[in-house]
Length: 298
Ligand code: MLT
Ligand code: MN
Ligand code: ZN
Image 1 (cartoon, rainbow, N blue to C red):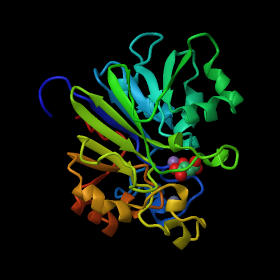
Image 2 (spheres, rainbow, N blue to C red; image 1 turned 90 degrees about the vertical axis):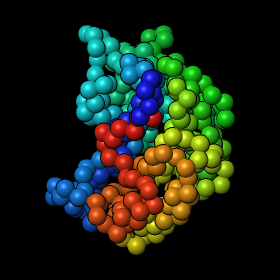
Image 3 (cartoon, rainbow, N blue to C red; image 1 turned 60 degrees about the vertical axis):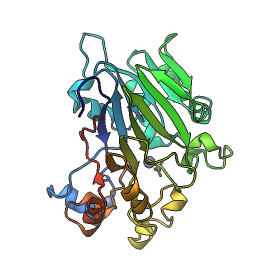
């Protein structure tokens, strides 16, 4: 890392919705993780933390596991009787694994929440539970993110880029899909840039993968038919809004980003298992598989 101020980036949770192992799953990977096999470390659900100064942190996505993630991360612990280094959150979409943690952050802490208009309206116009974050004036400050426009929060420049995806499952058939339902978040400070894209259905329309210092990319599934082949679901990866690693690995291998990391990894994905053929293929392409606590400072 260069001298001088830098952009702090930490993986809080590296697994997709359900976590790893998933409570109701006994696939090969979950079975290994549950047995305590060192090749298959447990992981909590998808979230990243970023900071321009090490004092104020922005959480990218509000994982259902946010309290465990904060407990495991001393840099997110309070520094006064009532205080939190967590000053804001920014959301990639309205999926439950990216928003459920908001309900766990309700203890009268002022927070800023940045997301696109469609994600904010999906959350607040249809969900009475989130009124728990509006217990007093100024508790939650909503910041709408317009696609392609940078917004500065806690010294971080945050830009949402629309990427191919789908509305959250619970809003399917309720709202018409919109380009801003699912975004990649570009975070910049001190001339360093990170692109966090945990849900990408297609490479079309993505911002340049060359630009960032750190690229965190959708690693949900290894193959299109991963769930179908294991008899776990009917849907193919792309139908669920996730391009399989097999289809993105060439693009990531060619990208000039300094660190290239697969995140939001589903518990069925064999890249979770160190030494597996699929993990070795990811590593041979110059990419890594994220784990909870991974430091990606740029
Ligand atoms: C996904 O990433 O596909 C979603 O997290 C699925 C879900 O909301 O259960
Ligand atoms: Mn998800
Ligand atoms: Zn599993």
